[in-house]
Image 1: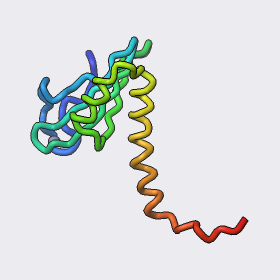
Image 2 (image 1 turned 60 degrees about the vertical axis):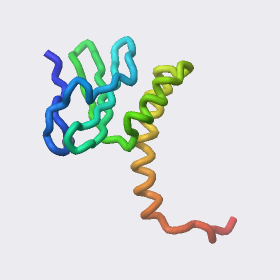
Image 3 (image 1 turned 90 degrees about the horizontal axis):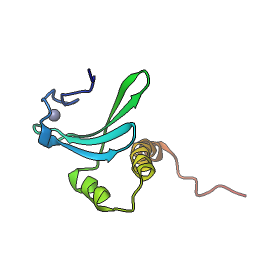
Length: 110
Ligand SMILES: [Zn+2]
């Protein structure tokens, strides 16, 4: 039995088949982009099939279906590229938060 989230993180709406886009299909991992049909929250869901079972990680994302399709249309893209994009999206959100909190460092002397 695959234990993957089947409801929106935000509003609890059940995902429909049409809400999910397969972004990456690897040897033992899959990344889906899900958009809630009720509140439009976008999430990326990574499913890893390991020896101990199936792991799923769900992250909210700013990328909408258009961005994902752009990624998919690029035939040169590799599995690592998608994972990197996924990681940098995650990092980007964190960094934005940090930048806002940081004081300007223009007056640093060498
Ligand atoms: Zn929702």
